[in-house]
Length: 267
Image (cartoon, rainbow, N blue to C red; front, side, top):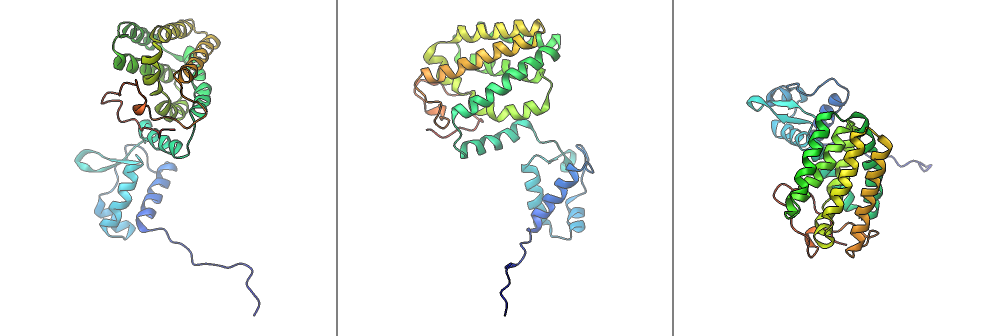
């Protein structure tokens, strides 16, 4: 008997709950279901899929975990848009599991932050620039309060990113920022670079107010390069995987709002 050159195997069939997830996800991606649309009740969905409710709930739980549906009024399932922070935490975990280095993150940071600054120079509203000015004034008054200073530093960069008015940039930036920015908690108290950070923000803001895209990107690039220098000056190697900054001696712990950020493994 001739040997079959292609060994066919039994087809793998996805579990029913996964079919529920895949079907609803496809309908959302195709635009047949739109954000805000209310889905049928669980009983109706189970009947349409011809599965029991416990299996349906597993599929719904997966949809909720991925931010595709949420419980609206009267606990009815509503189509949702995944939140940037939720998506970023998933990507951040993947980056950690892939043992990415600080250098790799910083290279991406150097690519994204200057672009954000250039776009913000062209697009930022006067109100957004005034908010940045207020942020900077509060930073100058918060040098003795590292936790507040650090939060304002994060917010200043976030204001610029939002002023760039580019959702693709925000989605790409968030997981990088999530892992990168806690390094400031280790750098600031050791190098006492508060004035240098404020001066850099002041130069960036002046360029933004002048609507100078190239200069805004230039000063942001300089500021981002300083970040890497500070990281190495406190004795950390940028070519090793990202450090868990909660374990670095001298680094102050984040407050409750920042504690939700995923911690990377120590090199």
